[in-house]
Length: 231
Image 1 (cartoon, rainbow, N blue to C red):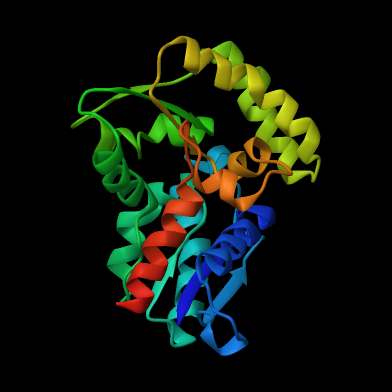
Image 2 (cartoon, rainbow, N blue to C red; image 1 turned 90 degrees about the horizontal axis):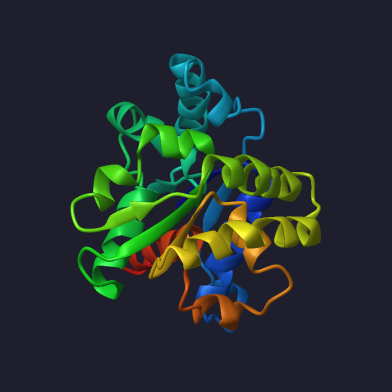
């Protein structure tokens, strides 16, 4: 059984579950994966509480322990910034936690040329903690939007998704995407789980899967999760 620690935000956790289901081509209820979604929406905001490391870690740990006690075989966390606490979480949990940044990196190695430019749209917390740089700086050049665009477009788009204003978020994030394309990024990582919801608003699942521009960590994590589930 798959353990999903969600609530960061709620729509992002549901987006992961939706992708998990759509990747599985079961024709009956019994052919779909068994999973537990713990929508732990009371976890302190990750970007805002980097300096309160232990407070966030404690809340994340409570969620992981719940999934561990629920007989889950492994855990996934559909939140990029939460992976700042990954190492300490894994030390305290007996079952595996799949690392989202590591899985996105492994996918990129297979699909992107070495030393190519890859854009990263993410929370300021993800950018500050370097959870993607830790992996990508070995083989690629990560490119971030300007501070102005980060605040005006990326941060705002993430907030709009959390508020349920998906169409507004889609419009708001466009300048950030265009700025990275102008910087000749070969791919763009949607490094906040709210952003795929904004970018792919009202588009079909097939268009998401076939995107040549975007790397969707939620979709990549869902793929990795199903591979582990079947294996």
